[in-house]
Image 1 (cartoon, rainbow, N blue to C red):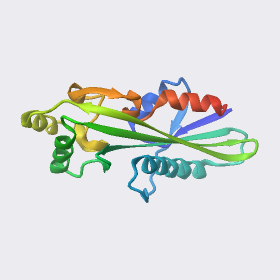
Image 2: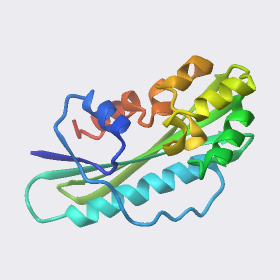
Image 3: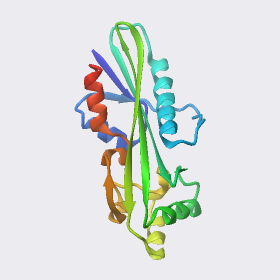
Length: 195
């Protein structure tokens, strides 16, 4: 019997993982995150590992279920600088002004912590998607900042929301930008015989 756990409170990740057709629990990681790099791919991989390990070690028991914990983290990178969640309106404005009319990258790291007959295992990967944003007028930026959308998202935008009308195109996996590259996750879980 498989016990799947998503170590994230993100409603977007919950919805994406739900598309795999598996039953899973949501137990968000709550420990402080430690960032030891400024390389986006290393940051998302490390943060996804920290989340998965925290929940995995809290739940690990001797029962016969196969425990599978999925940790994930997403960062937006512009000109090799990580744009986190904005601290306030001015911070969000600065981020949106920087990415408008240009291309940036979104990295999502995923870690699977799981058990098999030989013990505990870990597997991590990341995806990178390039996002092209149309130029935006000052009033378009202000209108966007007046919504609730920018303030709880890396890079101050959600591609699946209001901001979508400013996205010229992407190169890569759309779901990576939303927060969970679910097709790659499915393929990796199949290879690892976790699904």
